[in-house]
Length: 190
Length: 296
Image 1 (tube, rainbow over the protein chains, first blue to last red):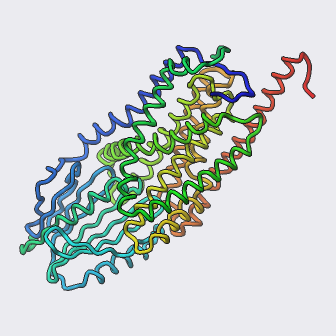
Image 2: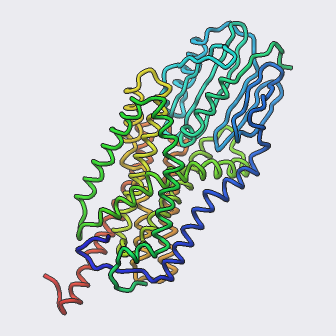
């Protein structure tokens, strides 16, 4: 299998075994040990499938593997998984249209002085409860931003996800599912 | 370090490294392909367009790099193994390694609003180490496929090219899922990742680590020096990758990538030049030894 214009040589069997064990150990450390350590260190994992109540103003169903990172009074709740963060704001009274909310997100990313974002067009969706929503997704060179707004006409909920672009392909489906599971309640954040 | 003997398919199958390479590429494909297939099902046009553009990009660079070879042509089978390690092995294993590393990093250190630093550190450490492991594995496959620093650099380029093409194709499809204009989304991702940062991206970093592997397995220097170069090259590639992804000197994507990328490309060209001179000297010495006098 080696090139035909040069002599074929073999490393000694002992060196091959040592190298195989070394490469296998490196790969196992990265793909088994690190995820185990990460699972134990990233905060309490949420129960997949059980609705999470945010300030009695809304509920949503976290996807498998997401952890509660921070619950900051009435301001926001942060969830994380594999370097990506999902900031969930309590439902608030709002009569803004979905398009206006999406435009606010687009303007915010377009004005970001730190990096250049390639923005997708706003995409409408409907939650499992039949409430309309809209999502704007942007990609910078290294990161993604996904901004979801769900509004029943009088109250709206915002979910803002950010993280390394390398995680987006694996979690974008989970983000869509979590946004679709949102149920807006009538309570007011304390 | 080496003994001379022919390698038969049976010997290749008896080597533990052969099976490790097969396992890594197989497991990587098992982890990576489902993401791509589900993205493809959601948006077939974007998927086909992404595969066409990034496949064409990889084939074009493959053809150019193969034509630029000196001192004999390298095995296309080994080149394909290097490409597959990057395209399937690294992309697949990174779906497990990157979230794990990131969780450990963010729970150990406080990044606050600087989460882009966590992303940069994760991508640099995880991706470069997994690519480096691929060149190291190829070096110990039966048939000693890496016999010089230049060989290591060459196969490192292909590990990086495979990774870049596969990862970027998936990014393109994912971006297109949230865009009205599928064609524009795929092209925008290609311009950003293939054109603006393509020259000093994954292939460049893994070529540097590959050169380190090539030096480690081929140099007559002391073991300590060879290990130093092996790990030093990996550290250099990780640092270059982190710097490239880090939220510094940003504001204009083109200016930022050029300012952060050109020094890495220049570094690779210097390594390439030194490696070629060393290889030419090796060949000269071998010719003199074989003929009993200086070569013409």
